[in-house]
Length: 290
Figure 1 (tube, rainbow, N blue to C red):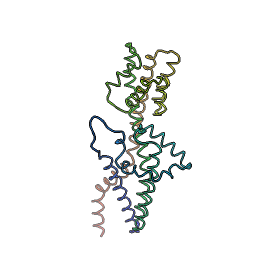
Figure 2: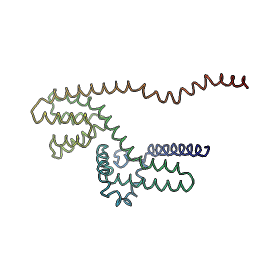
Figure 3: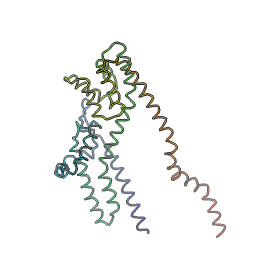
Figure 4: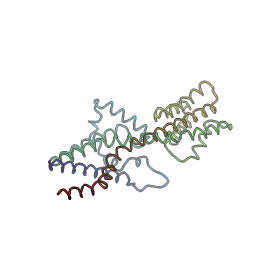
């Protein structure tokens, strides 16, 4: 019994140490020039350490069996706007390589009579790339959802003041702080300047990002172009709808907070309170009975 408990505690400690190391790698930044930041540096240092080695497992990651997973990874890479830093195929090969590396770590720990810690490390190494990528996509979508109503309000004011849509969008992007929404809109503007149609560039941006609210706005703008509807009134309606959605989402999160805090209160806070209140009484009672 004590051996199992000791092994479980060692596994939990190893997992906590593993997560701490990942956080340290994520916080480390490589010195770079102030005037230019390479897209490659957007990846964590831990991934950049393993990426030069993934060519050794490309024969395995390119197998037809992994085609659905590889396609899903490519879509997530585009949604995270990391396609200029690493290709989807290469990132999927990184996932395969880290899973194999984790298996080797598991074997080493098993030979050292600590199979549980090795199994935990194997699971963490295999799952970390997918979890990190999905977190990047979720944060990016949330940032776009927060920024989109303000951009639509500025576009509405500029268009109703007499500016062209593209001119207004270019002026707004030139004065805004760079964020995920600004990156996508600047990319679409650059494609339009290279000769691509406005509707085509906006549709490609919507297909690349796959954020529901942004897709709704883009579809409305494209339909307004096709039907000849006033784009100023359309942008005002879309901005009001997104602001209402953002308010409803904030209200929903506020209502969920008491439910989410219930578990840590019951598991971590209540036992401490009971120990402080009942501990001395129980001690005195046991002392009296003894």
